[in-house]
Image 1 (tube, rainbow, N blue to C red):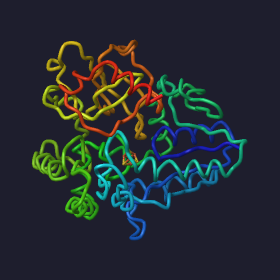
Image 2 (image 1 turned 135 degrees about the vertical axis):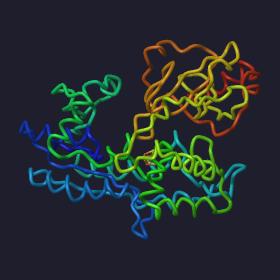
Image 3 (image 1 turned 90 degrees about the vertical axis):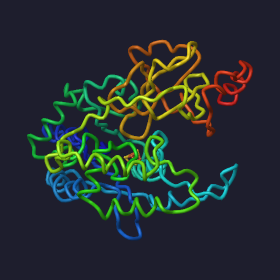
Image 4 (image 1 turned 180 degrees about the vertical axis):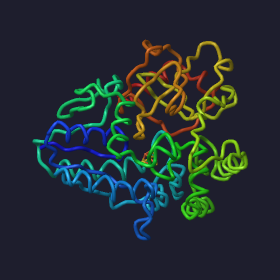
Length: 370
Ligand code: SF4
Protein backbone atom coordinates (compact mmCIF):
# COMPACT_ATOMS: atom_id res chain seq x y z
CA UNK A 1 0.00 0.00 0.00
CA UNK A 2 1.20 3.51 -0.77
CA UNK A 3 0.47 6.11 1.91
CA UNK A 4 1.22 9.84 1.97
CA UNK A 5 1.59 11.62 5.27
CA UNK A 6 0.23 15.03 4.30
CA UNK A 7 0.65 18.23 6.30
CA UNK A 8 -0.84 20.57 3.72
CA UNK A 9 2.65 21.99 3.16
CA UNK A 10 4.11 22.43 -0.32
CA UNK A 11 6.34 19.34 -0.27
CA UNK A 12 3.76 16.77 0.73
CA UNK A 13 1.16 18.42 -1.52
CA UNK A 14 3.56 18.38 -4.49
CA UNK A 15 4.25 14.69 -3.77
CA UNK A 16 0.55 13.95 -4.25
CA UNK A 17 0.39 16.01 -7.45
CA UNK A 18 3.43 14.14 -8.81
CA UNK A 19 1.80 10.79 -8.06
CA UNK A 20 -1.32 11.99 -9.84
CA UNK A 21 0.58 13.22 -12.92
CA UNK A 22 2.57 10.00 -13.24
CA UNK A 23 -0.26 7.59 -12.47
CA UNK A 24 1.32 6.34 -9.27
CA UNK A 25 -1.35 4.76 -7.06
CA UNK A 26 -1.94 6.14 -3.59
CA UNK A 27 -4.06 4.04 -1.26
CA UNK A 28 -4.40 6.63 1.48
CA UNK A 29 -3.48 10.19 2.31
CA UNK A 30 -3.40 10.94 6.03
CA UNK A 31 -3.31 14.34 7.70
CA UNK A 32 -2.89 14.79 11.45
CA UNK A 33 -4.78 17.75 12.85
CA UNK A 34 -3.87 18.97 16.33
CA UNK A 35 -6.61 20.15 18.64
CA UNK A 36 -6.13 23.15 20.84
CA UNK A 37 -9.32 22.55 22.82
CA UNK A 38 -11.16 19.49 21.63
CA UNK A 39 -14.12 19.95 23.96
CA UNK A 40 -14.83 23.42 22.62
CA UNK A 41 -13.99 22.60 19.01
CA UNK A 42 -10.93 24.84 18.72
CA UNK A 43 -8.39 23.45 16.29
CA UNK A 44 -4.66 24.02 16.65
CA UNK A 45 -4.35 24.61 12.90
CA UNK A 46 -4.57 28.12 11.49
CA UNK A 47 -8.21 28.48 10.38
CA UNK A 48 -7.18 29.51 6.83
CA UNK A 49 -4.99 26.45 6.43
CA UNK A 50 -7.56 24.04 7.86
CA UNK A 51 -10.34 25.47 5.70
CA UNK A 52 -8.18 25.14 2.59
CA UNK A 53 -7.08 21.61 3.51
CA UNK A 54 -10.59 20.32 4.10
CA UNK A 55 -12.54 22.25 1.46
CA UNK A 56 -10.06 22.68 -1.38
CA UNK A 57 -7.20 20.18 -1.31
CA UNK A 58 -8.95 17.13 0.14
CA UNK A 59 -11.83 17.18 -2.42
CA UNK A 60 -9.26 17.59 -5.22
CA UNK A 61 -7.25 14.57 -4.03
CA UNK A 62 -10.41 12.52 -3.70
CA UNK A 63 -11.46 13.48 -7.22
CA UNK A 64 -8.14 11.94 -8.32
CA UNK A 65 -9.13 8.70 -6.56
CA UNK A 66 -6.98 9.18 -3.46
CA UNK A 67 -8.89 8.52 -0.22
CA UNK A 68 -7.92 11.24 2.26
CA UNK A 69 -8.22 10.83 6.02
CA UNK A 70 -7.95 13.48 8.68
CA UNK A 71 -6.93 12.04 12.03
CA UNK A 72 -6.31 13.55 15.44
CA UNK A 73 -5.20 12.46 18.89
CA UNK A 74 -7.52 12.24 21.90
CA UNK A 75 -5.18 14.55 23.76
CA UNK A 76 -5.16 18.28 23.07
CA UNK A 77 -3.14 21.38 23.94
CA UNK A 78 -5.34 22.27 26.91
CA UNK A 79 -4.87 18.81 28.43
CA UNK A 80 -1.12 18.97 27.89
CA UNK A 81 -0.93 22.43 29.38
CA UNK A 82 -2.67 21.29 32.57
CA UNK A 83 -0.80 18.00 33.06
CA UNK A 84 0.51 17.90 36.61
CA UNK A 85 4.14 16.91 37.09
CA UNK A 86 4.23 13.83 39.29
CA UNK A 87 7.76 13.83 40.66
CA UNK A 88 10.95 15.74 41.25
CA UNK A 89 11.30 19.21 42.65
CA UNK A 90 8.64 20.50 40.26
CA UNK A 91 6.07 17.99 41.53
CA UNK A 92 2.55 19.44 41.64
CA UNK A 93 3.19 22.15 39.04
CA UNK A 94 1.46 22.13 35.66
CA UNK A 95 3.48 21.63 32.48
CA UNK A 96 2.20 24.89 30.97
CA UNK A 97 3.30 26.11 27.53
CA UNK A 98 5.10 23.66 25.21
CA UNK A 99 8.73 24.65 24.72
CA UNK A 100 10.57 25.02 21.46
CA UNK A 101 13.00 22.16 20.97
CA UNK A 102 10.95 19.59 22.88
CA UNK A 103 7.40 20.23 21.88
CA UNK A 104 5.07 17.94 23.83
CA UNK A 105 2.30 18.74 21.35
CA UNK A 106 4.26 17.23 18.49
CA UNK A 107 5.08 14.17 20.59
CA UNK A 108 1.63 13.65 22.13
CA UNK A 109 -0.82 15.09 19.61
CA UNK A 110 0.71 15.35 16.14
CA UNK A 111 2.74 12.20 15.56
CA UNK A 112 0.83 9.36 17.33
CA UNK A 113 -2.37 9.42 15.20
CA UNK A 114 -0.35 9.12 11.97
CA UNK A 115 1.70 6.27 13.41
CA UNK A 116 -1.46 4.50 14.55
CA UNK A 117 -3.08 5.01 11.17
CA UNK A 118 -0.11 3.60 9.25
CA UNK A 119 0.18 0.69 11.69
CA UNK A 120 -3.49 -0.17 11.18
CA UNK A 121 -2.78 -0.76 7.47
CA UNK A 122 -0.44 -3.67 8.19
CA UNK A 123 3.21 -4.32 7.35
CA UNK A 124 3.07 -3.85 3.61
CA UNK A 125 3.09 -0.05 3.60
CA UNK A 126 5.30 2.28 1.60
CA UNK A 127 5.27 5.84 2.96
CA UNK A 128 5.74 8.69 0.49
CA UNK A 129 7.53 11.46 2.33
CA UNK A 130 7.61 15.09 1.18
CA UNK A 131 11.36 15.60 1.09
CA UNK A 132 12.70 17.60 -1.82
CA UNK A 133 15.66 16.76 -4.07
CA UNK A 134 17.72 19.57 -2.50
CA UNK A 135 17.24 18.36 1.08
CA UNK A 136 20.17 15.99 0.97
CA UNK A 137 20.58 15.50 4.71
CA UNK A 138 16.93 14.62 5.22
CA UNK A 139 17.08 12.28 2.23
CA UNK A 140 20.06 10.47 3.73
CA UNK A 141 18.04 9.85 6.89
CA UNK A 142 15.21 8.21 4.97
CA UNK A 143 15.19 4.51 5.74
CA UNK A 144 13.15 1.36 5.25
CA UNK A 145 9.81 1.63 3.57
CA UNK A 146 9.99 5.34 2.74
CA UNK A 147 10.15 6.96 -0.70
CA UNK A 148 10.55 10.53 -1.84
CA UNK A 149 8.85 11.16 -5.15
CA UNK A 150 10.22 14.70 -5.19
CA UNK A 151 13.77 13.34 -5.11
CA UNK A 152 12.98 10.64 -7.66
CA UNK A 153 11.67 13.23 -10.11
CA UNK A 154 14.32 15.85 -9.22
CA UNK A 155 11.99 18.43 -7.64
CA UNK A 156 13.60 21.00 -5.36
CA UNK A 157 11.67 22.83 -2.64
CA UNK A 158 11.23 25.79 -4.97
CA UNK A 159 9.97 23.46 -7.72
CA UNK A 160 7.51 21.91 -5.27
CA UNK A 161 6.09 25.31 -4.39
CA UNK A 162 5.77 26.33 -8.03
CA UNK A 163 4.15 22.98 -8.83
CA UNK A 164 1.51 23.53 -6.11
CA UNK A 165 0.85 27.05 -7.43
CA UNK A 166 0.45 25.67 -10.94
CA UNK A 167 -2.31 23.38 -9.67
CA UNK A 168 -3.89 26.04 -7.44
CA UNK A 169 -2.95 23.89 -4.47
CA UNK A 170 -0.69 26.12 -2.42
CA UNK A 171 -1.94 26.56 1.13
CA UNK A 172 -2.83 30.15 2.10
CA UNK A 173 -0.42 29.72 5.02
CA UNK A 174 2.39 30.60 2.58
CA UNK A 175 1.05 34.13 2.25
CA UNK A 176 0.83 34.50 6.05
CA UNK A 177 4.10 33.08 7.20
CA UNK A 178 7.14 31.21 5.97
CA UNK A 179 6.33 28.13 8.02
CA UNK A 180 3.10 26.30 8.68
CA UNK A 181 2.22 24.63 11.93
CA UNK A 182 0.04 25.32 14.93
CA UNK A 183 -1.14 28.88 15.62
CA UNK A 184 0.22 28.61 19.17
CA UNK A 185 3.62 27.29 18.06
CA UNK A 186 6.39 28.81 20.19
CA UNK A 187 8.73 28.60 17.20
CA UNK A 188 6.75 31.18 15.26
CA UNK A 189 8.30 34.50 14.54
CA UNK A 190 6.98 37.65 16.19
CA UNK A 191 5.43 38.57 12.86
CA UNK A 192 3.48 35.30 13.00
CA UNK A 193 2.11 36.10 16.44
CA UNK A 194 1.28 39.62 15.25
CA UNK A 195 -0.68 38.05 12.42
CA UNK A 196 -2.47 35.84 14.94
CA UNK A 197 -3.38 38.73 17.21
CA UNK A 198 -4.68 40.94 14.41
CA UNK A 199 -6.47 38.31 12.38
CA UNK A 200 -7.60 35.82 15.03
CA UNK A 201 -7.99 37.80 18.27
CA UNK A 202 -10.17 35.08 19.79
CA UNK A 203 -7.26 32.61 19.49
CA UNK A 204 -4.76 35.12 20.81
CA UNK A 205 -7.08 35.62 23.77
CA UNK A 206 -6.89 31.88 24.55
CA UNK A 207 -3.14 32.25 25.06
CA UNK A 208 -3.64 35.37 27.17
CA UNK A 209 -6.04 33.47 29.44
CA UNK A 210 -3.59 30.58 29.85
CA UNK A 211 -0.79 33.01 30.63
CA UNK A 212 -2.75 34.14 33.71
CA UNK A 213 -3.04 30.63 35.14
CA UNK A 214 -1.23 29.99 38.40
CA UNK A 215 1.09 27.12 39.34
CA UNK A 216 2.94 26.81 36.05
CA UNK A 217 6.26 25.00 36.06
CA UNK A 218 7.65 27.94 34.09
CA UNK A 219 6.38 31.22 32.70
CA UNK A 220 8.52 30.61 29.61
CA UNK A 221 6.64 30.91 26.34
CA UNK A 222 9.03 31.62 23.50
CA UNK A 223 12.82 31.35 23.49
CA UNK A 224 13.09 32.22 27.16
CA UNK A 225 10.51 35.04 27.01
CA UNK A 226 7.28 34.99 28.99
CA UNK A 227 3.98 35.43 27.21
CA UNK A 228 3.81 39.04 28.47
CA UNK A 229 7.28 39.78 27.07
CA UNK A 230 6.39 38.20 23.74
CA UNK A 231 3.11 40.19 23.68
CA UNK A 232 5.10 43.37 24.20
CA UNK A 233 7.28 42.55 21.19
CA UNK A 234 4.16 41.85 19.17
CA UNK A 235 2.74 45.25 20.08
CA UNK A 236 5.97 46.93 19.03
CA UNK A 237 5.87 45.05 15.76
CA UNK A 238 2.26 45.98 15.07
CA UNK A 239 2.94 49.63 15.80
CA UNK A 240 5.52 49.83 12.99
CA UNK A 241 3.49 50.46 9.83
CA UNK A 242 6.38 49.60 7.50
CA UNK A 243 6.43 46.07 8.94
CA UNK A 244 2.78 45.61 9.58
CA UNK A 245 1.49 44.73 6.14
CA UNK A 246 -0.77 41.82 7.01
CA UNK A 247 -2.93 40.56 4.24
CA UNK A 248 -0.03 40.85 1.83
CA UNK A 249 2.12 39.67 4.73
CA UNK A 250 5.69 40.76 4.38
CA UNK A 251 7.99 38.13 5.75
CA UNK A 252 10.26 39.79 8.23
CA UNK A 253 13.51 37.94 8.34
CA UNK A 254 14.03 37.87 12.08
CA UNK A 255 16.88 35.50 11.43
CA UNK A 256 18.60 38.33 9.64
CA UNK A 257 18.26 40.56 12.66
CA UNK A 258 20.42 38.14 14.59
CA UNK A 259 19.56 39.28 18.09
CA UNK A 260 22.53 37.84 19.92
CA UNK A 261 22.93 37.34 23.64
CA UNK A 262 26.00 37.39 25.81
CA UNK A 263 27.14 33.80 26.40
CA UNK A 264 28.47 34.74 29.85
CA UNK A 265 25.12 35.91 31.22
CA UNK A 266 22.75 33.55 29.38
CA UNK A 267 20.79 30.91 31.34
CA UNK A 268 21.31 27.45 29.89
CA UNK A 269 19.74 24.05 30.02
CA UNK A 270 21.94 21.09 30.73
CA UNK A 271 22.17 19.06 27.53
CA UNK A 272 23.90 16.06 26.00
CA UNK A 273 24.80 15.80 22.33
CA UNK A 274 26.95 13.49 20.21
CA UNK A 275 28.59 11.93 23.25
CA UNK A 276 29.36 15.19 25.05
CA UNK A 277 27.86 17.10 27.93
CA UNK A 278 26.69 20.46 26.68
CA UNK A 279 24.82 23.63 27.47
CA UNK A 280 21.75 24.48 25.42
CA UNK A 281 20.01 27.79 24.77
CA UNK A 282 17.26 28.82 22.36
CA UNK A 283 19.04 32.13 21.86
CA UNK A 284 21.68 33.07 19.33
CA UNK A 285 24.95 33.56 21.16
CA UNK A 286 27.34 36.38 20.51
CA UNK A 287 30.36 34.28 19.53
CA UNK A 288 32.75 36.92 20.79
CA UNK A 289 31.54 36.32 24.37
CA UNK A 290 32.28 32.58 24.43
CA UNK A 291 35.21 31.65 26.71
CA UNK A 292 38.31 30.09 25.20
CA UNK A 293 38.09 26.27 25.34
CA UNK A 294 34.37 26.09 24.57
CA UNK A 295 32.85 25.52 21.13
CA UNK A 296 29.47 26.84 19.99
CA UNK A 297 27.31 25.14 17.37
CA UNK A 298 23.85 25.97 16.08
CA UNK A 299 21.05 23.43 15.80
CA UNK A 300 18.48 23.33 13.04
CA UNK A 301 14.99 21.87 13.36
CA UNK A 302 13.19 19.96 10.64
CA UNK A 303 9.94 21.95 11.02
CA UNK A 304 8.54 18.99 12.91
CA UNK A 305 9.79 19.66 16.40
CA UNK A 306 12.96 17.59 16.01
CA UNK A 307 16.57 18.69 15.77
CA UNK A 308 18.05 17.38 12.53
CA UNK A 309 21.33 19.20 12.00
CA UNK A 310 24.25 20.67 13.93
CA UNK A 311 26.31 23.30 12.14
CA UNK A 312 28.75 26.10 12.85
CA UNK A 313 26.04 28.56 11.93
CA UNK A 314 22.36 28.13 11.10
CA UNK A 315 20.34 30.97 9.61
CA UNK A 316 16.95 29.41 8.85
CA UNK A 317 15.02 27.22 11.34
CA UNK A 318 17.49 27.98 14.11
CA UNK A 319 16.42 25.80 17.04
CA UNK A 320 19.09 26.74 19.49
CA UNK A 321 22.79 26.77 20.19
CA UNK A 322 24.94 24.35 22.17
CA UNK A 323 28.24 24.85 23.91
CA UNK A 324 30.59 21.88 24.21
CA UNK A 325 34.15 21.32 25.37
CA UNK A 326 35.42 19.33 22.39
CA UNK A 327 35.19 20.46 18.76
CA UNK A 328 32.71 18.50 16.64
CA UNK A 329 34.10 17.21 13.38
CA UNK A 330 32.17 18.08 10.23
CA UNK A 331 30.27 20.97 11.81
CA UNK A 332 31.33 23.42 9.12
CA UNK A 333 29.45 21.35 6.50
CA UNK A 334 26.74 20.24 8.94
CA UNK A 335 26.35 17.08 11.00
CA UNK A 336 23.17 15.08 10.74
CA UNK A 337 21.46 14.65 14.13
CA UNK A 338 19.14 11.82 15.10
CA UNK A 339 16.75 11.73 18.08
CA UNK A 340 19.15 9.40 19.90
CA UNK A 341 22.06 11.83 19.48
CA UNK A 342 20.81 14.35 22.02
CA UNK A 343 18.92 14.72 25.25
CA UNK A 344 17.75 17.44 27.59
CA UNK A 345 18.98 16.57 31.09
CA UNK A 346 16.21 18.61 32.74
CA UNK A 347 18.34 21.02 34.79
CA UNK A 348 19.52 24.55 34.35
CA UNK A 349 23.22 25.34 34.51
CA UNK A 350 25.41 28.41 34.37
CA UNK A 351 28.44 28.74 32.18
CA UNK A 352 30.73 28.70 35.25
CA UNK A 353 29.15 25.51 36.59
CA UNK A 354 29.58 23.85 33.21
CA UNK A 355 33.22 24.86 32.92
CA UNK A 356 33.98 23.54 36.40
CA UNK A 357 32.45 20.06 35.92
CA UNK A 358 35.28 17.57 36.51
CA UNK A 359 36.05 15.21 33.67
CA UNK A 360 34.99 12.08 35.61
CA UNK A 361 31.53 13.56 36.14
CA UNK A 362 31.19 14.12 32.41
CA UNK A 363 32.17 10.55 31.72
CA UNK A 364 29.56 9.39 34.25
CA UNK A 365 26.94 11.40 32.41
CA UNK A 366 27.91 9.74 29.18
CA UNK A 367 27.63 6.28 30.74
CA UNK A 368 24.19 7.17 32.12
CA UNK A 369 23.02 8.26 28.68
CA UNK A 370 24.27 5.10 27.03
S1 SF4 B 1 6.54 22.29 17.13
FE1 SF4 B 1 5.00 23.92 16.78
S2 SF4 B 1 3.94 23.28 14.89
FE2 SF4 B 1 5.01 21.47 15.69
S3 SF4 B 1 3.49 20.45 16.98
FE3 SF4 B 1 4.69 21.79 18.33
S4 SF4 B 1 3.48 23.64 18.43
FE4 SF4 B 1 2.73 22.52 16.64
